[in-house]
Length: 430
Image (cartoon, rainbow, N blue to C red; front, top):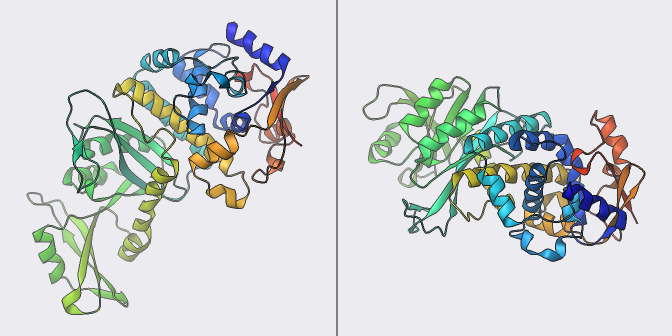
């Protein structure tokens, strides 16, 4: 096959140049079982090009680079070879691959990726944060417009919805829809996918957009998921909060609890109100509604604060395809989202192996300083591809990469890399 022949010709000629750090993602992709997932999604085999096109998109995501395929100078300098090819594929090839798969197939890929991440220990604890993430679009389509912020103008956008582990901040499941899809509708689909990954009982923490009777009722009927959400400050609720008897927990903070039903419904929920301030005339009130039976103080003073982990994920990883939407073709967008999440998962594994202070680098910084690292070369020794990095590499813990085949074997992982035609991979530092 042409791509295999070109790849082997590159290796025979030796490669030296840019994006050498992208090879650091290979062991993380192996640990995730990424190649098996890509073969299943594309329906192709080890020597076919389609899974390698998907792998190139994963590398682009990790580099936080848009339209990297247009930079022909990169074609023979490391990035293509990291995906088992001799050159980068075209935009047209990428479009055909993504458009040839349905959104249902992408959803299944996301669920399978979630299973793999769960096995790799990316999720801990029993709190899951859910939140929408809206991406402004320049599409010429006629569509419903939505506000990205409550005080901003309505605009065209692609809506994405995420669930994330509130302890590690890592995404569990994602879904998307046009601007005509309500938050409640999309969140119910999101929870159905999340439930296929997180099998244990979990508390969902959300924002005011999720304060609907329909969503609370769905969580109530779900069995494994409980929901904690702040209530909208309606006149009815404000009056109710002022009449409650509060228990003072510490200076300026007190809580109260009462059964609560939505207007027109007789289904009871727990309403937990918090009162801040010391002077009676200057009290401020906030209320939460929940389907959980857990301790009220624990719910609102500790568990709910973990919701911000998903906001940190959006801010930290925004450049990994979460900040742009070139098309609203949902087959293409879903496929790209699934591959973006696979790239994000691989960089999370890589980041955990960086030395302490470097683990706080955001996705863009990691892509620029580590994955696009240029001082290196690639050569073959027997059945092993050896990537050599030159110069200072203070951010890397070399013990994770020196004698990589032995490290992988100790983890019961086959060190032969299928997208590199069963070559093993090792690293040298000079």
